[in-house]
Length: 108
Image (tube, rainbow, N blue to C red; front, side):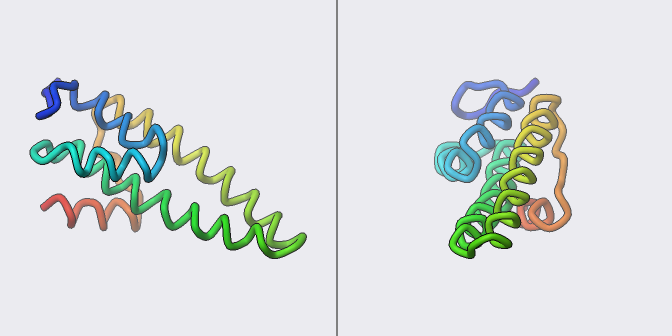
C-alpha cells in the first residue's frame, strides 16, 4: 500500500477522511496535496455528508413528518459512513453515484 505525503498508509488516510464525516474530509483535503486516492475520498466525504447533514438539520425543524425524514437521513448517513470507511480501508475507490462523480472530477 502506498504512503501519503503525510506518511500514512493511503488506505488508513482514506478511512480517516470519513471518520468525522465532512469535517475530516476538509482536513484531509487541506493536508494531502499529492495522493489522488486520499483526495478522492476527502472530496467524496464532503460531497456526501455535508449536503445530507444540512438537509437532515432542516428537516428537524419540521414537526412530526420532518422528524421522521430526518431520522431516515441520519440512518442513511450511518450506513454510508460504515460502507465508505470499509471500502476505503480495503483500498477501493468506491464511487457513490453523484458524490463520487463530483469527487472524481475534483481529483483530475
